[in-house]
Length: 314
Image (tube, rainbow, N blue to C red; front, side):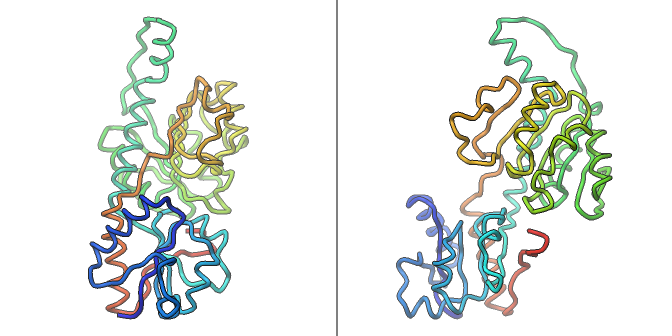
């Protein structure tokens, strides 16, 4: 074993304390300290840091840093400020997060399939009108992003009887899913889907992926769920499409700016459901277990766990 593990976050005191307690519980033989509590000697000897949106200047105070473990699955903010010669970044890949995301995708797909937004609006207007039931087998859900999250969400949708298609940057095969890849494949998938679910990581390639050109490829009246990152969808183009009925409803859990500013037109838009980034919250205890396994592997083998490909963006 070599060196104190540094915990570097910009979290509020209470959530940071919760993570620290969980990490110490999962790794009782390790010394884990917030950076501010580390001595100069401990900083000079530390080879691992666990981070959540860290200040790069703080990382620079750890000259022997071999690798960095992120507390989050998304690492676009880390990558954006990372020095070219910085240590490898290891994403949090937590099975519990995949399960909760798949659960959220299924729940909000049901919300759209069962016309919940329409019935909510009717209640506001004291209007009694029954709409024709649509079977899951008559609805195609298109998943943008077939990584761990997308693959598990696809399976939950298939089990519920929906038709599922999926798009990825490079070719992939997922049992039961009609798969597409590349720019032409994305257009084909969007044209076929009744509900589009965004689960792709934010990278230079996926930023503004769903813009007015791609929205025009979608079925008239399709619905959109964005559980990825806000900048994957161009907000102005989405609002325009909602106004024209090209997109019938959007369930949005992520935004360009979070928390969503109070002046945003999305708050009161009749065809938008706003969620406060709750689709797949990180579970403190399972995250700590995953991180403990990564660190144990490194201590035993000297091999850094699979790290982020900076060119790819995840």
